[in-house]
Image (cartoon, rainbow, N blue to C red; front, side, top):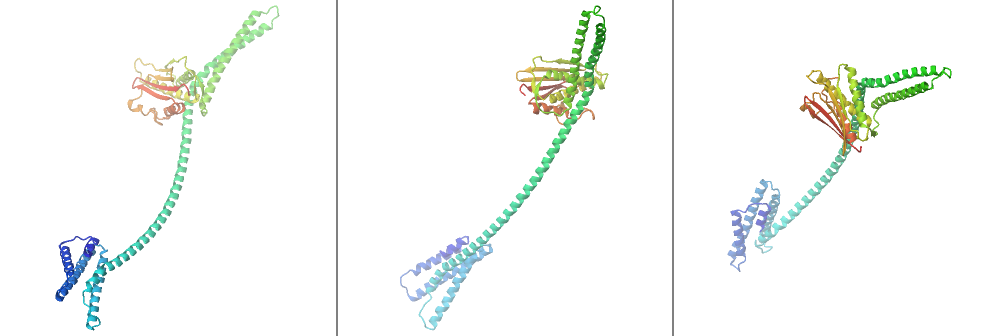
Length: 447
C-alpha cells in the first residue's frame, strides 16, 4: 500500500518490478500469519520481512530519483521520509544488538519491520505537514505580493486615468477652438459669397433702378410744365380764366404725382432688396411671394450680366403659377439661392453662345408650380449641360467648373444647405449634356 501510494504521489507508472515487489511483500505477509513454526523458519520469515521492506525502500529511492530528474521536487519528501525510516531501522538494529550483547534485554529483530512500517507514514505525514506549512506561507507571501501589485496597479491606473482626462480635456479644448475657427471661417466664406453675388447684382440693380428713376424724372418735368401752365392760368383776370382747363391741369398733375410715387416706391424696393441681400441673415422666416422674388432676381441677374457683356442677349421665359401660396421662408437666403442659380444659368448659355452654334439662341426659364405637398421652382437653361462625371460633385464645397477667378465653388454648396437644412426642402438637378440643365427647388408649404 505504501509503495502504491508513492507511485501515485510521484505519478510514476507501475511496471513489472512493482508487481514483483508487491507479490513478494504479500507472500511474506501471508507467511507471517501462519501458526507457530520452528524457530529457524520464523527467523527466516523475519529476514524475508526485513528484505521486503528494504526492497520497498530501494524501489522508493529509485522512483524518487527518477521523479527528481523529471523536476518533480515533491519527490524529495519521499526520499527524505525513506532515509529517515532507514535510519530508524539501522539505529534500532544497533540498539537491539547492544542490548543482546550486554544481556540487558532479551530481544529479537522482529519488531523492526513493525517500527519501520509505522515510521514511514508518520515521517511522511510530518513532511507533508511541513510542506503544507511552507506552501501556505508561500501562498501568503504571494497573496501579499499580489495585494501590493494590485495597490500599485490601482495607483498607476488612477494616475493614467487622470493623465487621460487631462489629455482629453486638452484635446477637447483644441477641438472646440478648431470648431470655433471653422465656424468663423465658414461665416467669412458665406459673407464673401454674398458680397460676390452682390457685386454681380450691382450692374443689374443699376439698370433696374434706372427705369423708375427715368419715369420719376420725366413725370417730374411734365408736372413742372403743367404747374407753370396752371400758374399762368391762375394769374389771369377772373373773367378770362378757364375753369375746365384748370381742372384738367390739376388732374394731369395728380396723375403724374401718382406715377412718381409708384416708380419711387419701385426704386426704393430695389434698394431695400440690395441692402437686405448684403445684410447678414437674421434667420427669421416670413411670408414671401416666391413668384415676385424669383422674377425680380431673374431680371437683376440678366441685366447684371448684360452690363458686363453688352453683346450678350437672352430670352427670358417665365411661367408663374398665379395660385402659388406665400410661404414662410428666409427671403434673403432663398433670394440668394435663386440669384446663384440664375447667374449659373446665364453663364452657361453665354458660354455656349460663344461657340456660335447654328440656330442657337440663349434661353432661361423660370417656372413655379404648387402641388398638394409643396411648391416647386424650376430654373432651366439651354446651355451645355453638366458632364456625367461631374454631376455628383456639383453640390460639394469649393467644386466649380468655372475658370479660376470666375467662381468660388461655394454657391451651389451654400444653396443646397439653405434649401435642405434651412428650409426642409430639396435641391436637385436634371441635365442632358450638351443640351440643357434644370435645377429643381421643392419647398414644403409649412416652413
